[in-house]
Length: 318
Image (cartoon, rainbow, N blue to C red; front, side, top):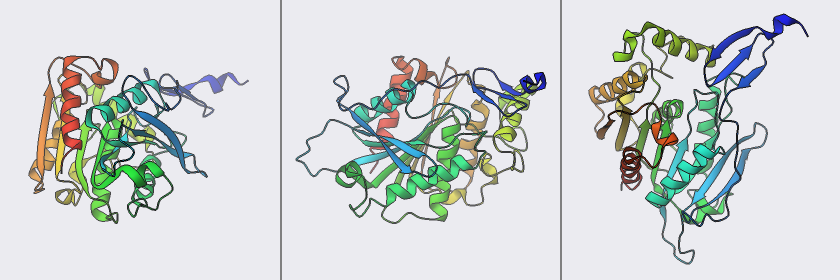
């Protein structure tokens, strides 16, 4: 093998290593766990569905413990995982456990999206995959879709999107796109952004005083989305969105953590949405003393529990 092929052209500690010969080494988020017919701890059941066989776009569905004889319809959660657009899946122990616990807490039906990941599938492919899943979900609003859990148990008038980190970026974009192209039969009520990853052409928060951090996030974005115009791209910069005031939901919860190096972008998003003229209910949940996606690594933490309770309230918005 040519020794030059072992040259690393991009490295993000803890996430990914890209070699000159285009090999990709994912450094975390590779483990998967099977779906669970019934989890005795939470009462939640899960199963996996392939949505687009040609591309492998799929999802893990979650259903809380319910009375199957009842015709009660439950709020629907669409969850979009993080991982810098390049690692993790809904099938990892981390995301399987967290989404399952949120489903149990809020008593909702959930669809956790498996999008194709960069850099093999550069952005905005993950955005397009996520939108395709939203369209598939909407195809069940007439109770005649391919997935019985959605047909029988989902309330399509109470649909919320939650994402963390890069998944929060995608979640925001899905809410914007639903404004531009409404999904028939679907009413979005909530958007939850956990430690979102946003950039801007100008400094967007306290973290940009660290030039190394700004260079890292800017570089990450361009590696994952090489066709982008840069940090003023509406895919990553909320201030560049032309119709933010029409965001397709009535309530937004922005979660930030004091020690998260991405906190500035999330605060910028909150400020930008507040100034946009959007007329919904905007909330900011600030957690002191914690870092990026701390709730995934320490879900029993009192602050993580409090955040889950806030998100459960969001999911049950009427």
